[in-house]
Length: 161
Image: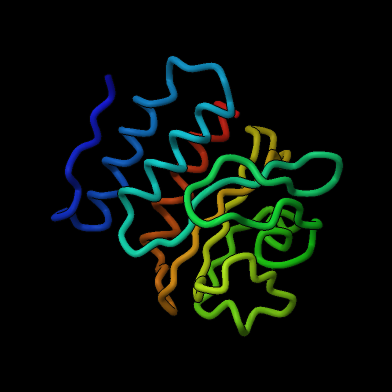
């Protein structure tokens, strides 16, 4: 059985290195993409401090559709190019938003969310699979270390989706 390590006293770099190792341990031998995303969403939500939502949107039929997540109920469908998730998906690049109320066209799925980071899930040949979406109720919660750590996790997860 998998047991997560206590990461409460870790630096951010240590936290994300350990989360990457734990993520690999959770999904390496599992072939079901839903199970893998569910476990990774739970791992991120319960290990990264000060989050109120962590999960996935998957590209289906030309739009993003809600996948496994942890947090309050969320928007089910997001058009490509709309909101933070849709914009990150369209550009195939990570978006880190310090104050979501200042992001043009922000979609408020959870009114408690104040900052957000969205990392595209891409195949090895750069095709979009979906996005990893992580929210916080704190303004300016995410920094370059979070971006690097979550980007590394997104690469691990994308190989198993």
